[in-house]
Amino acid sequence: MALPFDPAELAARWRDDSRYHADLTAPNLRYHLAEFPYPSGDGLHVGHVFKYGGLDVYSRYWRMRGFEVFQPIGFDSFGINAENFALRAGEHPARLMERTIANFRRQLSSVGIGWDWSRAVTTSDPAYYRWTQWLFIRLFRAGLAYQAEAPVIWCPSCLTVLAREQVDGDRCERCDAVVGERVMKQWFLRTTSYQARLHAGLERVDWPEKAKNRQRRWIEQLRDWLISRQRYWGPPIPIVHCSSCGAVPVPEDQLPVLLPDVEDFRPTGTGVSPLASVESWVRTACPSCGGDAQRETDVSDTFLDSSWYFLRYPCADLADRAWDPAVVRPADFLAGGPEHVTRHHLYARFVTMAMHDQGLVPFDEPFPSMRLGGLLNHDGMKMSKSRGNVVSPDDYVAAHGCDVLRMALLFSGRWEEGGDFTDAAVVGIERFLGRVWRRVVDGDPSGEIDSPVIDVVGRAYDTMRFNVAIARLMETWQRLDARTLVLLLAPLAPDVSAELWNRLDGAGNVHDQPWPALRPSIA
Image 1 (spheres, rainbow, N blue to C red):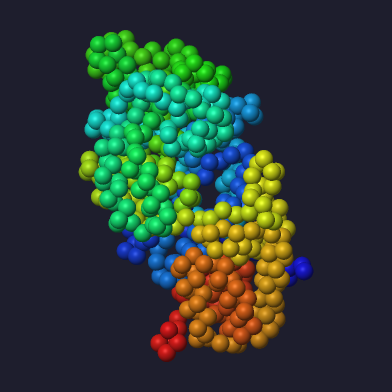
Image 2: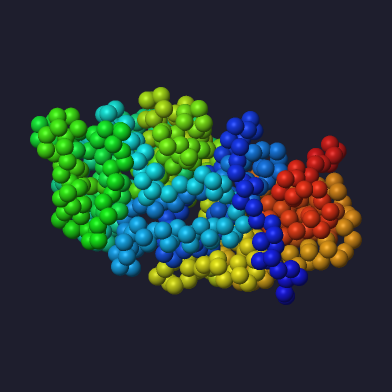
């Protein structure tokens, strides 16, 4: 059934990124955080839209409840994944990331999500990794970063050491190669110094019990975090090695230590980074004694980049500091992925505690409330590159519009559990929105105003059971007052709702309206 409206026309009419530039001084501010994506060459897939779309519905609902919601986004563009993709493409990662980030940004905007683009960050930008290097130096000066010779896990395919968290059984979680062990001199962060606090702190956070238990078990066998990598595409570790003074941190006023632009960035496989061959870059003066010295040639792990991005977002425009302690705050809500429970979530907690102990942040838990998004199948099969069934949102947005895609994905199953995305669901949602459109535009707008449906749908949004909200709207769309119906639909279908509200002669924009109120007898 053809839609009675043009989705592209609605998107052009109602999209306004400036609407989502949050006022960080607002007394009713809420910080809703998404785990930023690695901008792969494959682009965004519908699993991203399921995860980010769910957070966006949740954020739009909170705005309707009278809160100022800060929902930023950025790009995790450093690391082995990006470098491996560049090697396969035969292109320098810096130039490749420019193109893939532009594509991701287009896609992230095309699916109707209210991002605060004014505070976007990119981890491979020197303006960002300058402060990743500063963070390392703060940890080094506090005795929490050290270099030691130790048995380490080596990936023969990625040609670098790996942290224990990046190994699944005896295989590299990135390339699936069987890993081995070598004795090498590497850089570590003393996560074990915070073992007891990391364990105890889980009692104070609102996380799913499965996530807390999984992280507890990991903390109970915690080892120090190995962060050095013998690769090219990452922040150079800001240390200078001097035969007289030992390992000396680069002075903070000399940051960032820029990653040199080299044509041959292939990993050597010798246990030495490709940066070691850039003699003009390696040779330097010792910051302490002025004598001949050499730069550290390893780069830091991408998870160090993502251990603090949530602190940078509110202060993304600051040039002289990583963040402002008076502005930063913990994320009120994190829409996370289960794969990060023993990695990103743990590392961010460690870094936050360490920075809190240095008086640099006024809190010691970064994510006091978190929910984990489930995995999405397509037509009953797990989506994977090997199966060739990873689905891009582009064709669906072009053919059906973002509102249909968002709702079809979120109708596939409970957000925290995942579900099965099918073309039949797309057809069903398209039919439903077409009926709502015709009812509002051509039918009688009168109906129930104080319906208990308001409470049911609100509770569904509040608990991220978006499939329940959609099902309830499908059951009641014919009998609800048209304005109430459009308001209840607005978090799910932002473009269609904005147009319908305008056609109902509603005051202002639907996304500035309060959540419909119930009479006390109904509530």
